[in-house]
Length: 93
Length: 299
Length: 217
Image 1 (cartoon, rainbow over the protein chains, first blue to last red):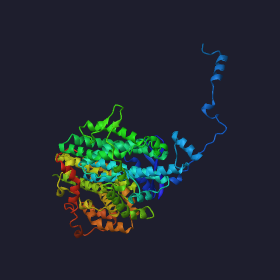
Image 2: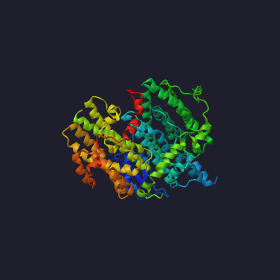
Image 3: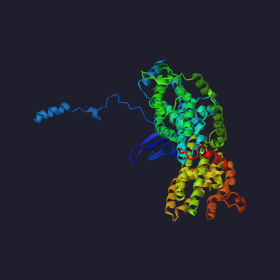
Image 4: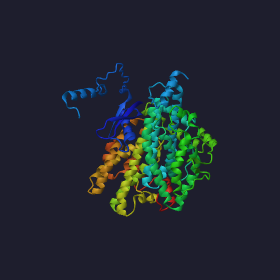
């Protein structure tokens, strides 16, 4: 028996999100059973049925040196904008 | 307590979430497995009192609704046992322990159902009591369990409506039908009051300590009484407890439930325990060949 | 009763009784996942019965529930195949597969009916039956060659043939890949006769309803 992970799409256009798992002898059974477990009330637009072994989890994302250059919080323009407006004479009265 | 465990306790008590592959203290894992397994067993055993009424449902609509309700419960058992399995205990072992009488399930599923009135009372009140417990699991520190609880609670919402619909239809019917409801309520009140367990204070409850549950037993019972005593009384039904009243502090007072009965029943001595486990065992054994052939599962 | 009403009741009674039998597996199927899936099939069967009863009820000036529950056992038009109590998986799947294959032919004929209402309902049911057929085939493929399953097919084959009207039997035999049973083997299995299991089924099915006659539930 294989563990299959089920991802469901709630509505058209939305991402597929992990919904649960089931145990089945093969993909044919897994699809038939997933259909009923996650769609019998027409609550899902579509399902992905994937053997667990096909899924590889990746974690641990170090940022030891605070790499803000490629994030919005790495930019503070307030002081520079004030200086530029004063220079151009366009500061608010 | 070692430092790593202390850190873990602080983490979950601060709202931290635990995933399957994370390190967890042995005690936490053991308590989790036992609690979740009991939940799975309860969903599965809950099917048996109700399934005979599927066959006897008096209208096509009721037959469909009851079949769908019980189907949901089997589906819940499937979701729950998967969580237990990922924590290390195989489903086959859980089912074997269940039929061998080595595992527990909730008190209410050890009692007989006698009439269509029971069908209504179970779907309306027993399910309501269960949903209160289940909502307290939505924030479980063990994330895989919290996630399935979301689907479970969503599906349970129709069960309560169905239950209330059955009850209201009976109450608006004949004297005989109203009597079915009152009689069933009278029989089920004791087990219902025992359902949430004896009132262990939150600070002494390991389930709360590990943030498996977010509500202690008495809180759940009070919530049930708050929500449902008015619903019961507005139909002209009588709760068979003369002491039941809400005091000035907003706390419900009631006759002390029979905790001995509860203990006796959940340890496998309920009126229907043996018969229902035997039915499970019979079909588990009868269809073992299917699992061996189709699922290549070792006997 | 018109030919149309009679035909509707035949189909509805088949679906009701089979759905009732299939719902006996609730909670005790070989696996939890299969329990959920098979329950959907049972519900669909009852749902189809309901839709068919509603069409007949309109013509007969009664209600679907009255047709489903308030007739006496010998007034039902179900075929013996669906009445049999075979609460073991080999027989259940054998019947399921045999029934779905027969019903496919029956529905195909109905979809071609000049009666728009009937043809329309047949098309709707067929759309759901696609998944019943997939499910039945999935299991039949897995159990093919298994002694229990093959014996069950042998045993149920005559009753399955008897479920269909005469003109569909040859195509059915071809679809299943078996020879048609001789007429003597079909004796007592034709529609119009009932198994001695029907009264017990009917008794349980109607016990609550009969407890307060005429009540609303």
